[in-house]
Image (cartoon, rainbow, N blue to C red; front, side, top):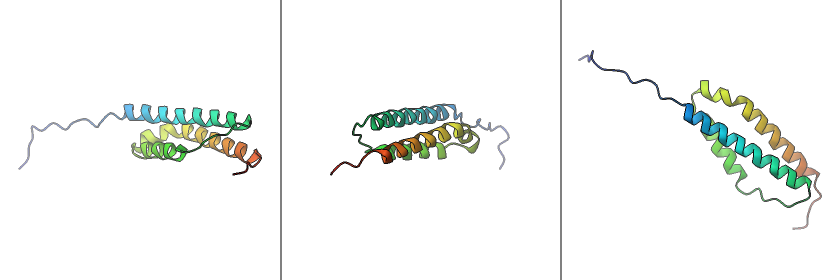
Length: 98
């Protein structure tokens, strides 16, 4: 039986999820940059939870339709660059005794 009077709802607006994912990426970039600054100043840092933040961001981006996820490409590239800069800064620091 066909229902000719049915109205197809419009697709959901993913704008708020894109904005939230972009905000999460930018907050993570800020965290990485601040952490790198502290490392370069010789201050001890605690990276506990950083992998969880990255995981949440990845999940948020993967949950977006590809047309929207691609709009975050530049943010993710910048985030990777910041993570690499932090890695280099951490490796350049002298090892502290445990």
